[in-house]
Image (cartoon, rainbow, N blue to C red; front, top):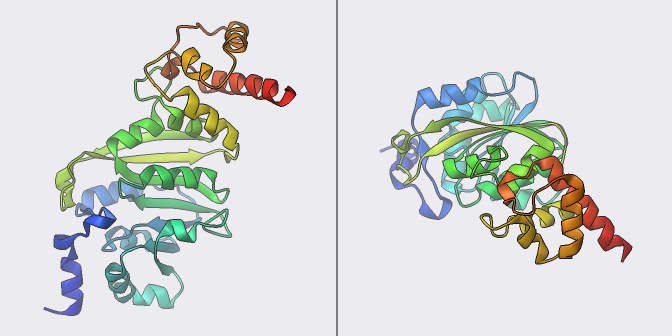
Length: 271
């Protein structure tokens, strides 16, 4: 068996420590390509794997691909040697989170595309939301993760991640991807999530506030927030905003969360 053939057969020996599940469906790949923004921005791809999506992206995009598995880096460098030579593709081998030490993965605006291992998906998406150069996020993730980022107020999946996303972007769960479309098949259903950013979220204090608000999602919002903030003050804020004291975290709009946060922050700053 040739060296390239052996590397291509890595799909049969996906490394569990990297959470590898290789997408084998050309139909799904085509749908991902069709969902890409129609602009001329560079694409950053996280987790190119065997390079099937990368090949399609390179037809009309400049791509920077981050791959953590050195076996796959070797394969990608061989498979796309011409694209690397002509400057259309750069392969960066290593953990993307290590590269992402600076404020941005790029010195120019870009669109993010990724088939994310489930164990790091949330972290990657939050990093991208905070990266001022990232303009859109098109990722394949576990369906439950996609639902949390794209949920609307009142949905049972509406969470702190939903509020953070709505604060800076529009998020849509585009379609599901069945486990049978992967090698090896994961134990969960995947989904394609698209996030079109409007701005960048940089207020860490608001994120910390949301963690408190959703610390027990099915409990009353007032009780959750009372673990950190003065309960009488919260009752006053709720009354001014017109929020029922019995309301649950998933029933409160993003704009109302902002108003509560600003009021509690003002009280804290004045002390």
